Amino acid sequence: MPGEIRKLKYIADEIREELVAKINMYGADVRLACLVAGEHAASESYINGIVRNSEKLGIKTELVRFSDSVTENEFVKKMDEINRDDKYSGMILQLPLPRQISHSMVSRLVDYRKDVDGVSPFNQGLLFAGQPFMVPATAWAVDLTLAKIAKERGMELAGKKIAIVGRSVTVGKPVFHLALKRNMVPVVLHTKAQYPEEIAADADIVVACCGVAELINENWVKDDAIVIDVGINTKNDETGKSVLCGDVNAAAVNEVASLVTAVPGGIGGVTSALLFANTLKGWYMVNNRKELKFDFEV
Amino acid sequence: MPGEIRKLKYIADEIREELVAKINMYGADVRLACLVAGEHAASESYINGIVRNSEKLGIKTELVRFSDSVTENEFVKKMDEINRDDKYSGMILQLPLPRQISHSMVSRLVDYRKDVDGVSPFNQGLLFAGQPFMVPATAWAVDLTLAKIAKERGMELAGKKIAIVGRSVTVGKPVFHLALKRNMVPVVLHTKAQYPEEIAADADIVVACCGVAELINENWVKDDAIVIDVGINTKNDETGKSVLCGDVNAAAVNEVASLVTAVPGGIGGVTSALLFANTLKGWYMVNNRKELKFDFEV
Image 1: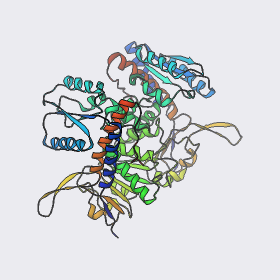
Image 2: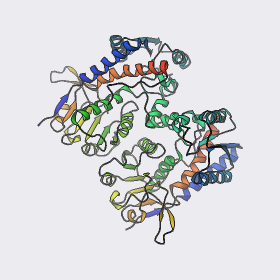
Image 3: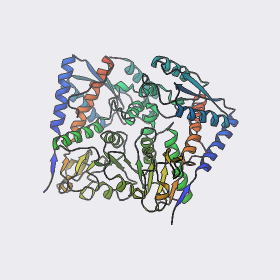
Image 4: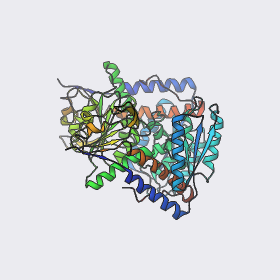
């Protein structure tokens, strides 16, 4: 019996409702700074999405634009101003950065309270130590979605094998630490793994975050597994039209898995909502010096 | 054919020789501060070992003693002095700390350049991001030992399955990240794992860092695997005398594995030498603002 392709809009909606309610309750003036150097078609559309979606929640996104030839010093000086200015609750360093700016260097300088993308070593270290504060929104979306699905099924996550296909600092690695915190048994797969399908097909849960369109097919998935699809790629459909697809071949995997998250309509929307949850966490920490916890968390 | 129980003194010796040579070459005045609150028999013997072993290399260890009732403020004030004083190249926060001092809070305040135990979130974050600076010496010892054994065998570590039995912030988690950096395929096991023996017995390499005397027996290990024993425990021998033992039942595992590291005489000695390698890294970073790399590294 084929499994379910699960849309996750209901989770994103629950998050957004709580954000609006809390922002109103606190009367919070929440501002997110988005530092952009140069112009890149793909990131412009991402940035426009952030501006539009933040407004709906009552969060102001300020674009801080630099020319493509901005020096690292100028860029860091602006970061420093935003770090020090309590008016700002969050800071995004929009990728790609120009060649002369080292992302790994500048991400060390984001105030951890405002590090809504979870790219600073301090936040990565807290996650490593099992005391996460700001976690990259995509990884948080994977963890939250899994926890919600498990809860709805009365399923215990502790002890379950989870195969994480991909090892980026924004998805694979943080998902590993969050899985460990839930007492799952995580294995991390990547391009150098031998027979990765076999290893994944031994897991109760597969997280596809490899960035390869529809790589994960039925050979990677065991019967009744839960599959979380993090990918957002494009492919040509039968008519040659470019359409969105994930890292999972949902039609094929669905024949064996019990649930596959949809793309589009899945993790992406939850991620988008959680980016603003991080921004509100930043506002709360700056203003109350305490960590904000949400009702939507499981 | 039984495998080999490998003593690792030759690796520790190689490290110490290079440390002495570099300290002499730089004419370096290397000082390690060890902050100790109260008196605990086990930690006193550990501290004495550090003092004695550092002296042999030409490193001065200064014990900074507090009473058991020291306040967190007093403790942090002293940490701050050591952070700011370029005379010090390293700082150890000796455990256990008294109840009123939060280890997770104070470890956030160690200057990352002097964080020889790799406990600060900044260093943990660098490791997480694949750019390790100071890594807990035990985890470094595991990684270095594995790399040396692989090199000697002409064996490729990339793609190999490594089962890490234990998930502490000082061993299991950093070993996971170091393994990933070497393109191995890591799985992390712990007390909540179901059938951990089966998962471990599927791995090419098993790292035993669970802190349970001789837990790892032949059922956890596949033919010809390499087994790294991080444990230092005690057990009673046949005559009832207390003797040291590892997390691995070496006699049993040795029947199937191709190599098991010895306890005592294994990872412990390499760890001890690498603690001082971290201290010299600290001296070099404070004085030259660059990372020191060693010839012994693989």
